[in-house]
Amino acid sequence: MRPYTILNFAMTVDGKIASYTGESSISSELDKRRVHELRASVDAVVVGSNTVLVDDPRLDVRYVEGRDPLKVVVDGSLKIPLNSRLVTLYPGKLIVGCTQKADAGKVRELESRGVRLVRCGVGEHVDLPFFFEKLYELGIRRVLVEGGGELNWHLLVNGLINEVQLTVAPFIVGGKDAITPVEGKGFPYIKDGFKLRLTEVKQIGEEVILHYSVTGR
Ligand SMILES: NC(=O)c1ccc[n+]([C@@H]2O[C@H](COP(=O)([O-])OP(=O)(O)OC[C@H]3O[C@@H](n4cnc5c(N)ncnc54)[C@H](OP(=O)(O)O)[C@@H]3O)[C@@H](O)[C@H]2O)c1
Image: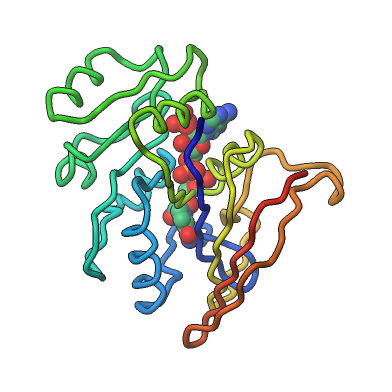
């Protein structure tokens, strides 16, 4: 069994979730409140290792009153810095999925600070279906994924995303190396891609919020 999983991201009108430098201050204050409300409605928020390195996020609910979710990082080789906010502020709420190849010293260091490590597979990267089954076993039923683009792709191709919520923000930044919501290898033809059903359209100020359910491929 796996948790029900919502993918959320904010993108510019030209479909980037960060500029080519990796900077990603895209959402307005109003949209941040919406995301924090969404966080308060889930058991855990999941991000990729690169997002932790670039953004050093807190993944908390400081814009709203609500339940602070567990924080989960997909981090095959344990790149997460010991001085990252997730480790220093929320070690007891942090779950890191790594592989058997992860450095034993770093595993011990993180565990000694109260971080829960889940070893998922023997390859270079986390076995995501296995990791999500483990999250379910830990009592996590509802998950919010907050990127980045590479993790989003691998979760999608493994069939682990049920719903997509996105904010289209009134910016255009360009850049062929700027990250898009879903990176990875991609599909050769549009007909091969995921099929979505539009379930909600909302406007908050100058931003448009779209909700889709993922209906298959
Ligand atoms: N605007 C937004 O809503 C938003 C949200 C989040 C992030 N961002 C931006 O996105 C950028 C980071 O995105 P990113 O795409 O570079 O990185 P990312 O998705 O944060 O990190 C890459 C992730 O993909 C995983 N991965 C790679 N290959 C895999 C495989 N074969 N199987 C399973 N997992 C695999 C990596 O795991 P390993 O650790 O094992 O390599 C890692 O967790 C930053 O600039 C950030 O600011 C924007």
